[in-house]
Image (cartoon, rainbow over all chains, first blue to last red; front, side, top):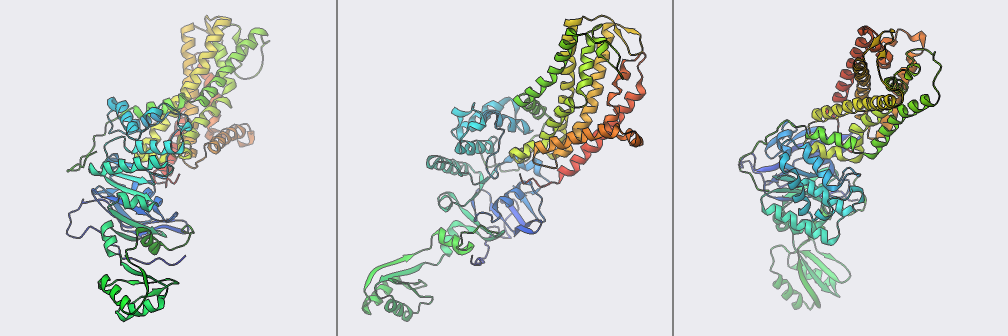
Length: 328
Length: 283
């Protein structure tokens, strides 16, 4: 694995912004398990109302971070707040407004889906007992599980279990949703439904922190992105900013890439790379049409010409390395 | 699901919903029905066996078998005596082992904690449910025994261990007292179970550990050379319920037993809290 490029973490919370404009904020949050540092001094900043894509390879510390945020595990160092209130001190006040899905669904196998949700509702002292049944059925309906509400949980498929966990996260009105891979195990139809649901919830004003390794999910619904690698937050920015910051490259297709490269260098471009049938270089401030004209003037046979912005996947790989290894 | 402008502090009200949910989880589970059925089988077997071949009498300790033919209530006492060393502790061990380890094993612990259920409240509710189960299991054995006994052998005045006669109503009252006393001891074992349950994510392992504690306590109590240790053993006082069947009632033994049970419950509940309050939940 190559070493990760250390990108500058751009937070959206300037010093001038009022406190409480962040739904999730952490300072130097660190968790060390025996020998291993699972989460290494991360400064999360999730603005209210955003859909924050929390990206990272398997084992990069996403789930540990989520457990830290929810107060399930205690940090070795650092602090954090949810909805402007310090955690874990304010857990009893804050958590009723937070819906969470942590490391997959977990329910009592011999209870029905509905009975499982009723149990969670019974545990919530802020929930109105009289409306429990109605709210449970509304949550089940919202994730398309109402028809299977009376079935035992053990008979559910993985997708149905995932839906039930989502329904649990939506049992009460939530200001913040912390969802760990919510579309895991869902079929394509279910994935689309969940994305639509999340978009809808975001439109209603909920803040969503969404851990995932599906980049398409991030591109479709996220407004902000944070990238974890080896326990560190290697990038954090609004998605648009991350895109704008990405350097577009020109890509010339030709059977004489060396000649093309020479022309590009003469134009003052640096970082020119050649392959068997292409030459590429960062665009810089040059007008693309001028490059084409120069190439043609120097008799370089141009078969194709494009200005390509790196997609999220390339950015992701450049931040977290190419390897298939899980983060050790 | 709307953005709330000012932070709204949700109203938290005292509620028995979680406790009721716990009880429903315990008493709605088929495994536990099977366990309770086994507990109920013992007085049934005793009643039928004594009916078929009445005992000759004798034996050591409070021998209730000999009295059964004269009064059916003694089936309940005989059954409690037989079940106290193993069956009742086993039932309490299984339930208390499930308390935290069972939820951790399923992963439901993390979701309960994020509801949120404060950890102290979780332990309090879980322990209350364990105590209610211990009392229910004891009463079940007594009730099945008493009903079958009365049906097969009839009721009437009860002869105490001191040889005097009590009215039937007084006899039933004494039997209830015995049940409460036994449940106290089992509740103390349940506190040990709750503590063990916070140490692991394997409920079966926790059950075995609690049973070992129970059996070890009986074993140590039977070694005369360790008599200095006996007053500190939880099970040392369990058989003292016979004192409640004397006339007048001898409170010294049972009072001591209740005190030791209370001390065990307090110490191990506190230990469970100390362990669980700051524990990382990674299940």
